[in-house]
Length: 79
Image 1 (cartoon, rainbow, N blue to C red):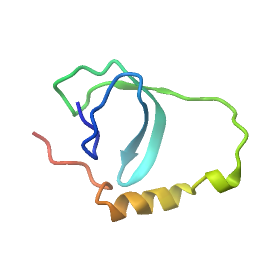
Image 2: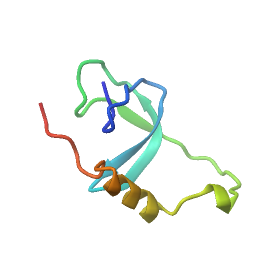
Image 3: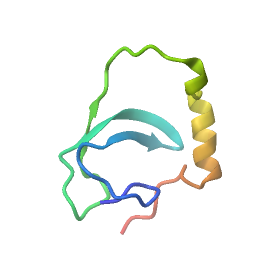
């Protein structure tokens, strides 16, 4: 199992889910079974209040632009 950027995926990882270059979900990966990168696993949403230092944050549109610059805004071809 590998993420869009090629990194190995493991249950328990904190992840963001992308669609059309936008973040549509974020949480903890669970129930993923090795051997399949598509339609595999679930995300347990992270819902917690956290105080934020704005200097440590990025606007979601800027993250989407960085993904586009790296070519990670499109889903890989299916196998």
